[in-house]
Amino acid sequence: MNEKHLPTPEQHADIVVRQLENFIREQRGPKGVNFSSWQSMARKEISDAIRSHKKGRFEIERVKKRMAAVVAACLVTVGFWAMTIFVDRAYGSAAAMVAGAAGLILGATFLEWMIRKAVAQHMAETRAADLTVIDSLDKKIKRIKREKEKKLKEMEDEEGG
Image (cartoon, rainbow, N blue to C red; front, side, top):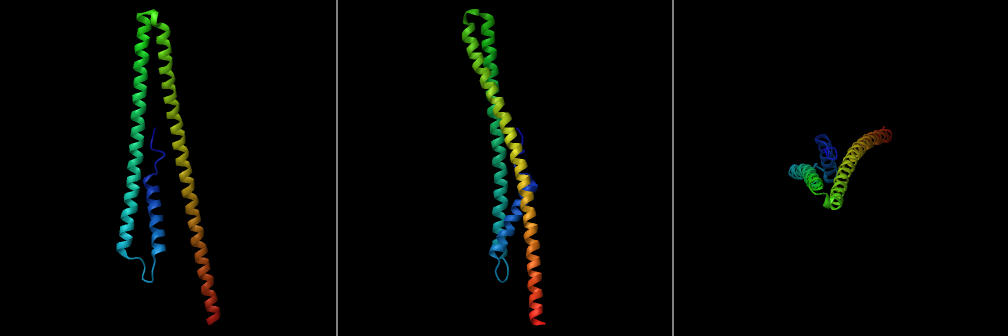
């Protein structure tokens, strides 16, 4: 398991900058945004990003520890019952069933790990694609805004001139 499903520091920074930019645009008054308001918003967004990252890391560690415990328990169970088979053939069928169940649990744990890894990779790829689309849309919006402002200025010049 890796940290691919967590946003990179650069992605966190992009998200925080976009949120701050939206805040500034929404709160803009005749004199601009109050610095203390902007500072408070920046502090909140940055702390949320850090908290989110820590929560993601905690989840990764928790999953790793749980999987290690399940694997260890299954290996101990398989080893114990395999030894039982060698020691006393009378309990062979019971031991085989328990060892088989432990093997199935081990296989299910491995399958879960593989699925989590694939999902994490998919989420990382999707997030990167989404951020690219958002960035592209931002550029288009800014370009359209500049064009509209230019046309408005031209119209004002035509009316005044």
